Image (cartoon, rainbow, N blue to C red):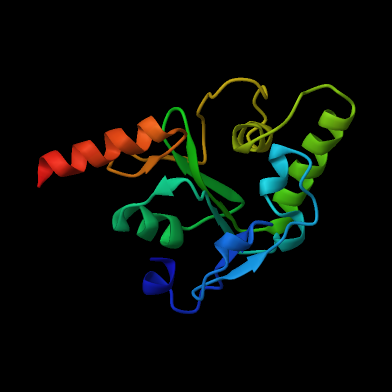
Length: 163
């Protein structure tokens, strides 16, 4: 879908798992893989980078929004409970957030960090919880993340009932 909307985009799948090797993208084995935070592949972060979470079904409308919405620093897309994508205008900002959070993990100030902690740190909010402030685009269409098999099953049932 990304290539359909932006043929010039470089698509990289960040995973050590060779099963994710596909012709439409380049697979990259992350240099760091100790924490959840390492999903944001530090060595791949550049200006104009977009992270699309792999466990998400994206509608065309949401993907178009992710790829075309003007972004000054970082923008996040998701629901009240999940982050689906992160767009980064200036890579140095995300790298700095990751280094700060990694330092907090190493110092045992926090157990781990995910997209929510990156979002909260970037927006100068308390790291715990899932509060939404600025720079977060609420998605309210059929875009959905899958955290367990039941999520997928309910998604399939909803779409089968529409047909």
